[in-house]
Image (cartoon, rainbow, N blue to C red):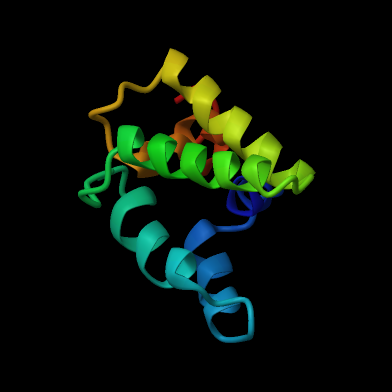
Length: 109
């Protein structure tokens, strides 16, 4: 979402990632996921939407079994489940960015 928001504001996504990776904001997502599988629209990380939905669901179930109220995690689980309406289980999990904001690649894509 941060990359999409920056793109909408006119910031080049690659420049944003360079800035993040130069500081404490770097992560696997900024160093590997976005440059390798997202910005080029490859979506071929090898990890499927179905597996991600399963894992997010398991984490949500665990929180419930521990009587933990994790509102942000609950919203994340709902978003991953809702993505099944447009993204099949066999699609790469990186394709979730298509639901976030088409401005990563330009309006309307």
